[in-house]
Amino acid sequence: MADLITEYTEYDSLAREWHSETLSDYDVSLDKARERGLLNEQRTRQLWQLLGLLDPEELLVQLPEWLAEKKVESTNRTTPTIFVGCISSETEDAILFESSTVARPLMELAHKMHSLNRGIERTKDDTDRHERLVDRFREHERKFDHRDDLLSLSDKWLPKSQLNTAIRRRT
Image (cartoon, helix red, strand yellow):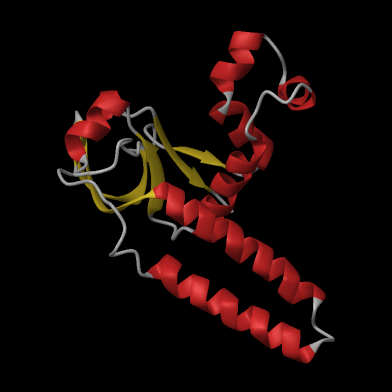
């Protein structure tokens, strides 16, 4: 399983890999791509913030669209392809991906929590504002921890050969 999961300790390494296709298509470095506005840096930051909030056994997987359409019971026009969950078992060819949840709403929550945390740090002297921000942070934290209402994978055995990405943030 270790060779299946890529772990990142720094943001730029993740950004370089996450945007590798764009970097290759334009034949540019990460810095040049940033200068030219070729990357969705906001989404990449949200992804990094999400990875920082996951439990150590959780990881993020990205599936090809055809596999996601097969495994997700979605009524939306677009099927999500990025999920958070745990590998509970594996064979030579597949992993059992459990407790899965679609990643995008969690990325948005992680970003809100990150922003609130920065506000909490800056408002230590303003007790009322500080307490309001702490309350909002705790509310978002509860939403992050209770993911039952979010879309998940219906058939959780995933072929290893079809995983586009399996990543985790290492601290």
